[in-house]
Amino acid sequence: MKKFIALFMLAGFLFSPVITKAQDAEEAAEETTEVVEESTTPEPVAPTVVDDEILDEEKGFHQIIKEKFIEGDPTFMSPVLICLILGLAIALERIITLNLSTTNTKKLLAKVEEALEQGGVEAAKDVTKNTKGPVASIFTQGLMRYSEGIEMVEKSIIAYGSVEMGRLEKGLVWISLFISLAPMLGFMGTVIGMIGAFDAIEAAGDISPSLVAGGIKIALLTTVAGLIVAIILQLFYNYCVAKIDSLVNDMEDASISLVDILVRHKLTK
Image 1 (cartoon, rainbow, N blue to C red):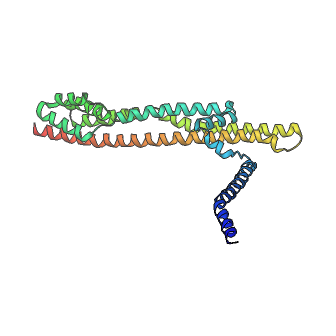
Image 2: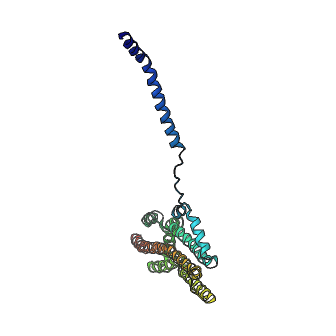
Image 3: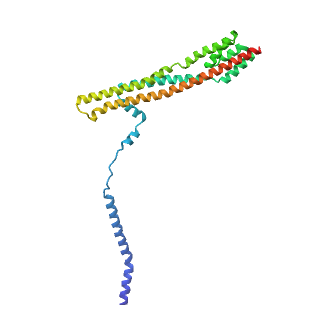
């Protein structure tokens, strides 16, 4: 009996690893089956949502402008665009010219005074002729009348100063014209678009949003385009006017200083 119990225990001890491995294999197979079943189970696919705002953001600025230009009807948008192009061309030309006309008046006055002391009026003329800008041109005209007296110098400076101021203001009238013309062209497109909308209502005999939407859209886009062009050109126009005022003030101050220098030079002779 004891031998039988001992043999039974020994058999259980020997076969326990095999049983354990078999149980582990069965559990692993069951887990694998569950994973396969879970992986093969089709997951619900979320519907693809296309956001119009994302598509709009992907569009470039030029593409949006082009679309609005076409939607606003090129017949009415083209004159507004021409006003913008011509106005900007004149404004940029004026800005470049005015910036090139800027002169360091203090430095120029110092050179003129030094030339008067060392070489007289002719040397001062050479300095002003070799300097660009309206201030130097006014100085040249004043020095040319030095032999006729200080009063003639003052009159020459005043007269030629008016000429230079007219040259500085050249082209501003055209910018002002385009500033006024662009909104008027936009409003004309507005009126024509509204007329088209009412014609469509009259022809259909019914007030439908789809009938009037096209005419109203043209009206609004042309108005916005005209106002935008006027705002842009107005900014350039104001810059040019401010720059001209600054140059005129410099010319007046420098002219007074030049007359004082000539008076002192004449008294010291």
